[in-house]
Image 1 (cartoon, rainbow, N blue to C red):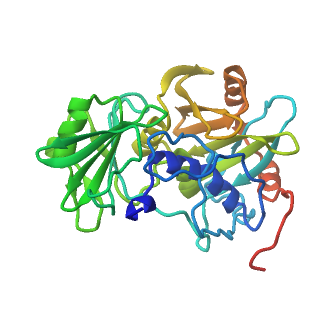
Image 2: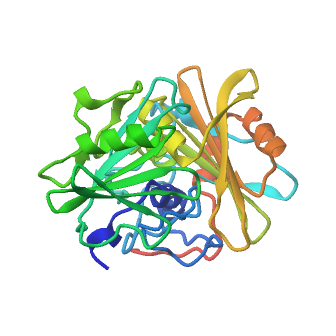
Image 3: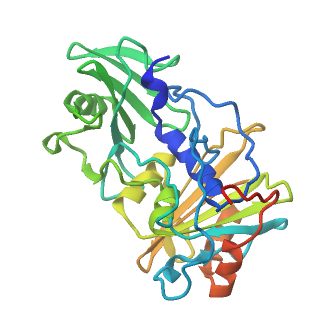
Length: 346
């Protein structure tokens, strides 16, 4: 295949987020999640959620041990889940990347959303290195012509509507939720591929309340955004860690709300006394699993809870049980040992 395989769907970036947490756990080797054989990025049936695709060659030897301490301004993001189902336990905690940590590749998308995100329309626009001489999908797509340009339209397994349109010998990819095909087609007609390979919609061509909320270089995935400027704690079930729960805490941002919307079709839900958003998606594992997610904001802080192997009620119980960690609790989680601990790079 062509350079198309080098680019990612939103789905793949979502998967990468939880795998990135494992890679980020300093020099420790973490257990693998169950996952299907990797599919090429252009398949429209790739699942979202958190069975994460490995970034080839990415080795993270971090400085995430507890070397920041009290007074570093991170206390407001250091929250933990206190009520877990029987057999579950806290596993690890991570502070933001340090100056010597290797971070994941920055997104190359322009992201557009409305003031109602995570509900409402959301759209990402990205340039592709692939040629329109090759189909962007292997199957389950509709090929069409827009203003004499080749285009392709398909659905992901989680309800994203995806369109490719040719531009100056390359593809531009638009990934959306809650936009009808007529609107998506009109936006594709106006998409511009930039000299650096990125792509965008001119502001005058935006509609349906869409505005630019993230430019290339901005981590808009809720887990990866918290790794940049927030904190993350993880929890596992059983000795083989076959199910996982991730709590990501950060600063509320329109870009992160859009990232939540892209992961799955969010619905309004009450979390404690706060109105939040919940969703679910195929975990892409064998045997099949469903990943549940919850997102809410309060007191100037955003919370994102993602897990598999839990019921709706257990997810809500976990969400309403969170509280700020003490310094000792957080230090213990940051420095928690993992099975098969290794010492790469030492």
